[in-house]
Length: 311
Length: 314
Image (tube, rainbow over all chains, first blue to last red; front, side, top):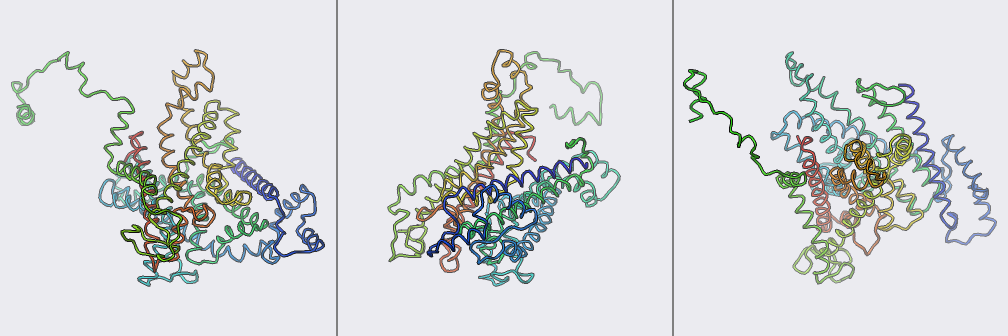
């Protein structure tokens, strides 16, 4: 078990290292200096700027320096945002993204599980069909269609929710629905198909024979056995939420991190690009790592031996 | 008559109510139903699935319209007509016009071309890389498999949005950039599917027979094993397309995809969303068509999966 975790941890680091190196190589492969601007600068200013950003050193030394700073969680200084550090830029905006993201992930899991359980318990009856039609519709309508639509209907036309912003509890409703609809649909389908299979298993028959009421069978026996695919999906759910929030933040005017993804590419602000990329990569890899461990904890059948998963 | 016997048996089981039927040798050997090949069986199941067939017809209709509509319309997708901006749908402009007076009907179908092209191109690239990589991983196994699998895992852990952003630094925003970015990680899923299939199939007798006759590994993989793994490969392929179309719309929405005047559903939705309270049709048509297309590909892909593996259908 320990070995398995260590193994996963090492690979998380290798992934991260590959990404950092690839990012660094790409940034330096681009012709032209990011410090060039429309305004004419004297050679001395240019030189000072380069020294400030460490661009006057040989490439390999820059790389080493970047790695060293990175190990101290220092992502460098933005080139376009008036010498603000990337750390500060991220910490100021990430709060919004984090709150929306957590709310969305929790909503996705809860609503998806509920929908999937209802569908599985009423297999091939009306509620099942309804839930699955909802799920396919949720999968088909992409967030950039869902978000403006919700905004138009619920905020502009019927004035039930605020149009933009993210301050009060009500502000969260529309962005969360828009951000979670696809994941809810996915989780619902995942839970439904596993749970239908589990409900046919012998141990469920035993529980029924012992006289356990239906909701307790689902809660105690079926759910624990059908939640596994959802746990392993959590890592990718995080990735989807992060990606999706770029659009949702734009539509609902939420001052989160999403805008930097696009803005830094247009600005060619290399430290910021590298910073946001690495920051999100760490976040994602960590989530996936945690999901792997959670997977092991949820399923008592999985025994780890010599670093490999065996059932 | 036969029913009478059965109904009375339980109440009054006297021997005279029974009749010996005996064995009819001709009947034992008779094949009651026409025998179907695997593919005929799959087609039969697919045709019986109404939702999947609906998806299939919608797919065909959208492909045909995407090709024909821009050709047959008297409008084009790039001409401005500044006297007729933001017009509601009419006989002249079926889907209305946008803020530059461009015909939205043609633009929407031009956008469909872009979407479908991205979807199909991404799927085809995934298919080629995935089959070769997955085939080698699955067939050779052992250390080869281990190393190749690790490489795939590392790549897979990098989200495509980050790859797109990194690529956009060195490449201009365009269709090619989107397709390359999607292909960098897109093939891994296909490779894993192929790997799993090949690992199952390589122990079969026909693979062994082929090897005994002196066939090399690549001949066995591509001539014998891959054709037998076609089912899951096709399903994955169908389900790749809507994902790729979504990614294109997503990036174009953000302004990182195709650039004006080329139309794309993502850019049109972005334009439309900003004016939706006043000119809702500018959002409605591309949004509706994108959702409909994704719906069609998804239900067809699901139906195809059920048709290939009826055990999975619940």
